[in-house]
Image (cartoon, rainbow, N blue to C red; front, top):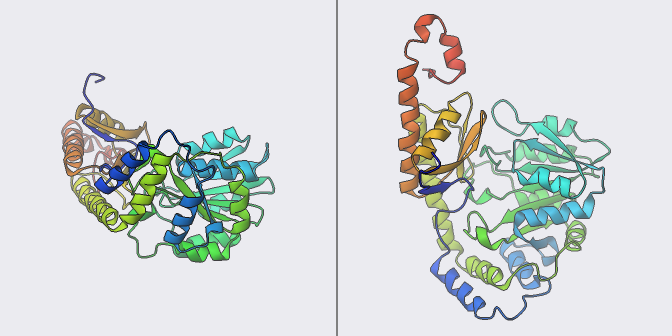
Length: 360
């Protein structure tokens, strides 16, 4: 199947839309000045993002994507041999970042319904723990820790542990019980909230993210800032995107509408698809995810496949999502045909466990 061309790239949770015309225009202007250095530190972006988020500038740190800010935080608070806890599976970069700073990773399994197990995460914290990560909405499952459970979790985290709350997908969340990040930041000085311009704002290649936190914590993170670390084209694109918030918001609404269309259509085709608050859907075993991944490849769709575990499907254009539907509907039609006699052999329970028979 290596010779099948990839027509639809749905593996990295990228926006299906290119930068807006106004953003591209700002980028071109910045390119014309490429012989000049950007700001030593991104103070202009800090001030603009702070005004946009309605917080003082000393509550904001900017870095090379949200993963860059995460690394700065770990460099600021972790010493070699400290531990860093996170749910697993999650964003693949977190164990890599832990290794980069010499931290011992503590991976806490997700609950059986694909959610981050807050009680288990709390039980994993000890005197050696310096950071605990929550990805909310969660990558890759799209689940959400709602307001009350998140607030209760933060109250129980020891003050020597910094909470890294990764909100890379928060713009796609539509749950009415979405946590109030501003209130949480006011209440917890050991909290750093990560945001990014890569996902909803469609600037993945330009690598700009930011963190929100208490001034003392932000000051420590800023001390790890790389000079000249945000290039001028990226900075110009972010400034233009902030001015185009309404138009970009409508793009996000379109992605959310496509997410719900795809989810309902996949459920109608036989897949157990849980609600998602991200720009992706999660298909999990015991549904036939390995067969699904192969069918997607045959259909020219590149998704994120975790063998034996699940498929993360980025929400793409309507055309890309229709290609997903065509490929994955065939999986269930094939499964229904090849296993039609399995219940008659007295193996109904086993077939159900493996996702080959749907519950009524």
